[in-house]
Image 1: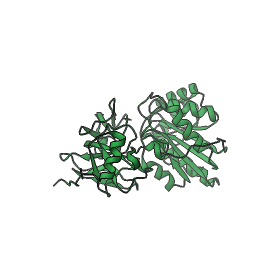
Image 2: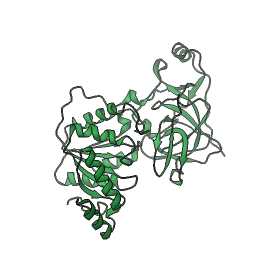
Image 3: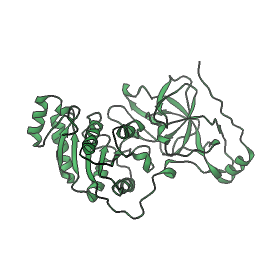
Image 4: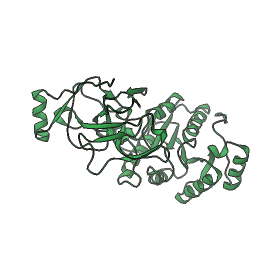
Length: 362
């Protein structure tokens, strides 16, 4: 039987007058205080009383959705990081956004934003919602059709959005000089996070007391940054901390400002080392833009390339060389067997190591 929490359409008069002053006469409703909230909203401070208004939903705004009664139960990350079930008919909070995954799905926000009462899809387990363009079976756990109810408003009827709850901007930037290691990959699921954790553990084993991690690009994921913290990172950041649910679509405008803020935040922190992982493949998620912004600040960063096969490793090293970044180590599935590792090292003339098996003290 579908689980259907009640949506209260009647609102308090004081709140109605606030909304009327800000939006004019709009339909909306109240949300239950225990409404399920996805991890993409982990930085958002929600008011004790939650209301939504039926206006177009834009990227990064806190929005209310209802899972279709004909849908199967889906599983998404809660703000605590645990996996929570959203049942058919459940109302929950998430945000509109874009995603371009080579192996999971592609989706995004239509021009003008999400329209109230229209149906869309959950396109990431962190709680990103948009139109579905294509999908694979890997999206099955979180993929569900939802109805967009409206945008959540806070005090004085102001819409709530990720950009209102970001890490404070650095007033007077000064690079603290932490040792920096950059992790990039030729595609998804090639061992970037495995490499990043290996580098993190190496820094800690060598006496670094404070190591910061930045997952600079891709789709936000509480589980991924929490994994870094579990392995000893003092702090871990991703795009949510700087106001975006993802760094898609590729070639979007204004990413320089977002990336500069992320880099300034991390480089200015009093840390011994900084690990930066670029999620997604090297041509997507605006990674080329990020790499150029990084090179402007740290042209001598140590680079680890994770690649699926020897040819991909060779192509990745060439692309990075064209940007002006030299690869110091190659890892990933291209090093899974002695023959493949030997072929990769011979082709690229760069040391190779399987970090899934490697000793982090090495």
